[in-house]
Image 1 (cartoon, rainbow, N blue to C red):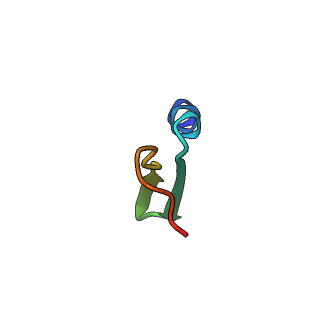
Image 2: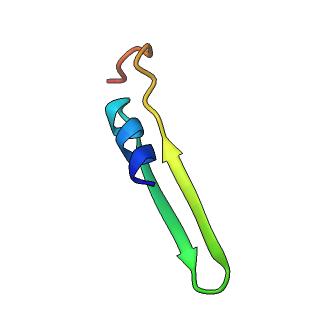
Length: 40
């Protein structure tokens, strides 16, 4: 996950996980749209 974190960070994104013991984990990530117009 550290490599993914590094790549996402360089591109303005982030990663996080939600886990429950015995039920596994779900990983989420976001990326920023660098080409989008800034929102007021």
